[in-house]
Length: 430
Ligand code: MEV
Image (cartoon, rainbow, N blue to C red; front, top):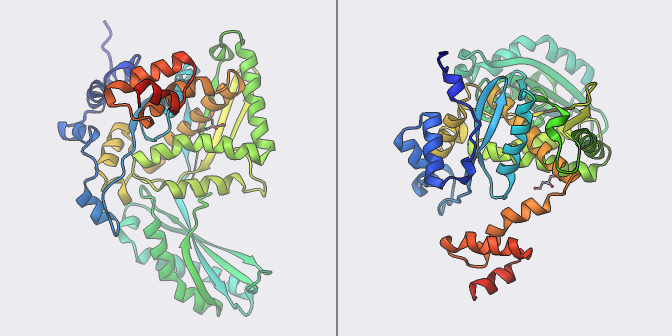
């Protein structure tokens, strides 16, 4: 008999996982990811302590908790992943897990990330001759790169550091002509905000000397268009069939939904919000800066002057559904809160990613799957039925149901088709 390999055992297909009790789910994931008892205890509520919070921010009062779950079924570059996600919105995890299962039937995702190259910006004003200043900067490129590298030996030791200098000129601004110097800087496995900001601050006096101008801002750009990740998948039409809707029709409806979000910024904002439902939840779970990721994603979506969908879903030559997403994903697996927040540490262990690029690739897959789940539902039976079913538990909680009553009140609301706080209060006798 053929031996089962470790990869066979570590499938992210976990049928019935959602039906388990919370403690049983923790046990399954702990076993899957090889968590220690202590690490598993972190999931069960021992996350960030108030005293740790006090060391992280000013004026701390305590902590703010969010539900943490795992999405199942992800197969990325032939490897199985369980995806930790922290999010308060019902149906995000169920939807993304379902989409990942359908995508898995087509062979899963392929994902790749560019080199982790960030952009640091230096704003230079009052430059006497912009063309001459640009030429001077370029002729001092090596000196400037060495200066940028001098302030972060640990990143350069790990193979990262300054890569290039570029200039951009804005001749006509309300404050006069503006020269903007970009430092391209490889931050390896860190998000790298501090490294980039230190590098541009260090370079700034020399940039001022070389250009004869006055430096104002020195800060990274969150439009990290040199640090992107791409995910792709192809789903056989038959896998998309629904009761009463043939697979080929679902393929067409999804492609039409995508076209709506490419054509119309009003739709694109909602379409991309759905993508970020998934990506932000992984960012938060892994201690990454989700505001940076949000800023980068939406700026990138508007990069050609008009805001549009981050995804492309189309009918391929075989009549199957082919999807693709590319977006900036400046995330790290070292530095920031990733190693400080106990839950983020455990989440990264569950995810099992080795590098920032691998994390970015997986996050792009999550975004693509989350989007498929949303637009497939919207283009077929709508999202409200499934969503309200899950939302009913929050309604019961909001009406004051105790933990032991929540599910039965929620079931009653669903059965009555009346998922409202007032009705939940009535049922509770409040
Ligand atoms: C809700 O959080 C997200 C959706 O609105 C996304 C979409 O419309 O594509 C369902």
